[in-house]
Length: 111
Length: 115
Image 1: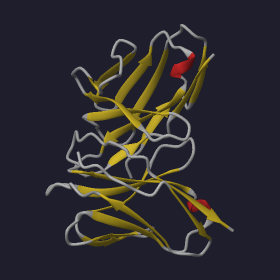
Image 2: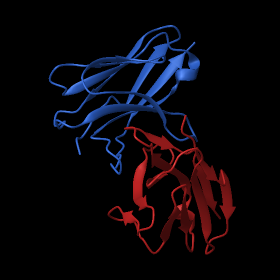
Image 3: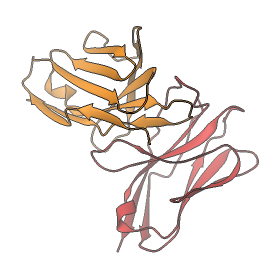
């Protein structure tokens, strides 16, 4: 399982774009990169998943460079409700794949 | 979208008693479910992998006789914390593999407090 490294915490202000970078130097060929969001006392919620280049959905974008050794989750125009812990996970995500969570990044959005 | 539920959402029990937590996939079948434990301000820790119709696979350091897992159907897995002690107080979360997707769906979690 590829080990991931993320900043422990980040601060931002409402309306700003937030970029959270995750390092995964030993990512394998079959591995996908998945980001989850977790609010206190709730289960994690899927945000976005990608394999290479750029993926965008209604809530975020995921940028993956050609070497795939890192990835960046981009949250456009954050609001107070985006204050949460964000986890970067790397793995082949095939059925039965064990998801091992790293420490995650605590994002604080201020007014 | 795929929904995973947990019951109860919170439970308080006395030391020495057993508590059962249910995890259900509401609108899809889940061959594999996972159980996690999360202490305050910490990340999720995988406890075990639950496979329908077979024995669960426990992570290193997790006592299988204390945390009994049963996955009797494709939509239900249960975690029983036996002879609970205050140090078992935690937030327990389950997840299930999505059908045909590379995504895991997480339940809302169960807060266990052992007094």
